[in-house]
Length: 118
Image 1 (tube, rainbow, N blue to C red):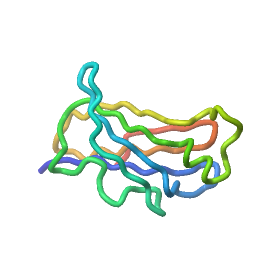
Image 2 (cartoon, rainbow, N blue to C red; image 1 turned 90 degrees about the vertical axis):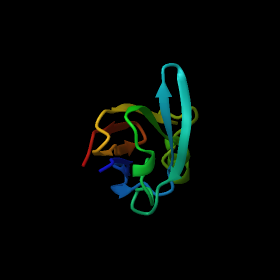
Image 3 (cartoon, helix red, strand yellow; image 1 turned 90 degrees about the horizontal axis):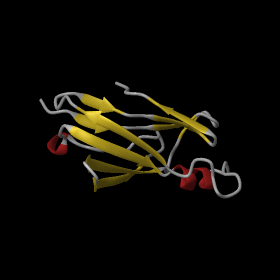
């Protein structure tokens, strides 16, 4: 069985899922950075399909970039420019090609956290 990668974003300042937030996924190989996919979160703060589905899932180094500045501006939470959190990159490794990797983002205008979820 092949694994897959999912994410979701929770707006901890508002206590709501972060809908309409753009996310990009890159595969890293040494100094190279290959763009794989872009998605936008739905009303539940999730993407409608896995960020990296089973047929494209492979071991390696990856980077998710969450375009938080656009979201914070759209929700009226942005302060003056430059924003404290305009883009949030999360680099992580996938070593088990048969597992589900879930990388969520808990976001506020001045902080964030992440973890490997289930």
